[in-house]
Length: 96
Image (cartoon, rainbow, N blue to C red; front, side):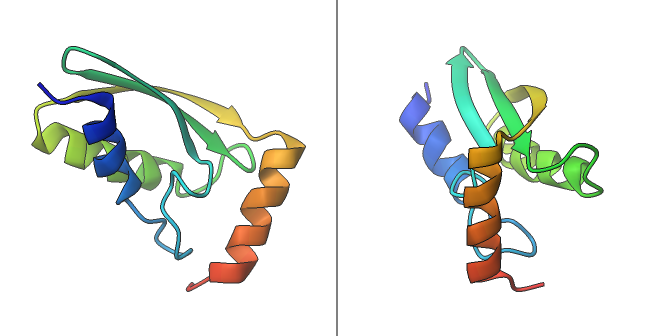
C-alpha cells in the first residue's frame, strides 16, 4: 500500500511545462488526501479558466493511474498571497 509520502513524492516530480518548478512547489497542487486507491487533492490556479488546466490535471492523473490510483479533485483560484508567490516563482524560472 502506498503511503501519503509515496504519493506526495510521485506528484512532486511533475513539473509545470513552462516553469522550471513542480506543480507542488508552485502551490498548484495542494491538500492531498489518500483513501485506499483514491487520491483527492485541490488544484489552485492563479487565474480562473487557465487554458492549460486540463493538461496540468492530466500530468498528475497519469502517474497516479500508472500505479492504480484514481484522482478526484477540486479546482480553486489562488489567494492573492498564493498568486504573488506563484508569479515570483514563474518570473524566476520561466522556460517557456
